[in-house]
Image 1 (tube, rainbow, N blue to C red):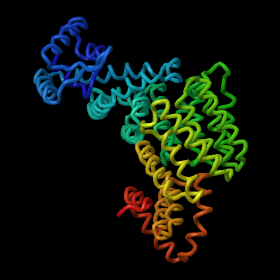
Image 2 (image 1 turned 135 degrees about the vertical axis):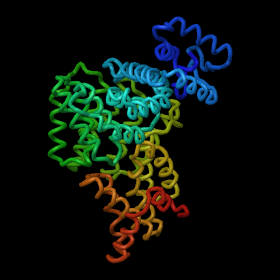
Image 3 (image 1 turned 180 degrees about the horizontal axis):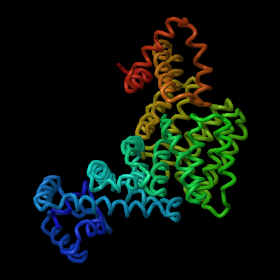
Image 4 (image 1 turned 60 degrees about the vertical axis):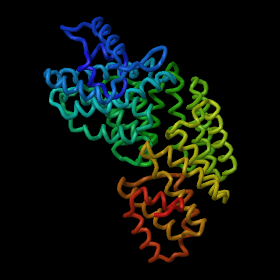
Length: 457
């Protein structure tokens, strides 16, 4: 029992321990008894109440893995571990869970992060686990999301795409591409936009309108990589598929998609109405945290309407509500976009010291999602308004390089910032501006962020 438990990285549940350790020689009830004995001997630690999770100290785990190898059971037990994790994650893919993720469920998912990393690493490298790679990667989204490690999850999922082949079941392939799309929905990655469209086509072949709807809306949220015609096609198709009996939290996403479609068209009042509807539907669905996160869209559209005071009020109000709900200290993209909106509002109001503080909070929250570069336009304008024109030129050069790497990118908020920035940069002269932008294009992102905040580089 002890050697088999060595495959767990981090903590594990009682049910997972039984699944991994039991076999023809050791049934689930005997495994339960042995687990209790190991706890009594302090070889396994039980933590939490009333439902504990278990874990081994690293020294004990190293010893257990050595014994597992000596017994010739490593491949078999690691496969059992991956299968147990896949079964757990599949629970959260069921329709009755997809749109009612509770705080307790989020905590339970976050606790599996180390097990997911270990299991994905093994199935991707071991021949005995190759058939589990695509299903496990596809089911992994909720863990990466719960731990705000979407950027890591995207890299890990993209790293195993060569395991996709004609023999992979269509449902597993669709779920995999949808995970890639969701993990990259806030990142500057063309792969995630393409993945959303692939997932939508696969779900269409499966006759799954609900998940096709989700995939289409995920694609529409990455409109920075699509033309207005393409966005219109995607949104129109989603509207055709929507059913009134679907969960309100699911249907709310259409309002978010329409918000940014209208923003692309310059129809900002209609965009604002959709952003407000999105937030209200989140509240109607009982998703109180998501209601506040959705307020970031309201604030950003207010900026596009030329109302930074209103944007600041919305952004700071939502952040205060998140603190009141106990989520103010949580790191994540929802909070990051609120701080980003506040940062821009403060810049436009020429409250630059406050803008720096808001920008630092935005970067802290956006970076784990791979969306930190969203800040570059705001940082460039901040630097220019502080009189640091050379820094502003370098920062915008880096932003341009990222855009060039990913193809044509449309960002309404960035266009607003550029309209304020370009007259300031004109004072550098064409040749000097070009030289500085070239330097910035070659800079590392961490150094560009330091430059933006006025830190030593």
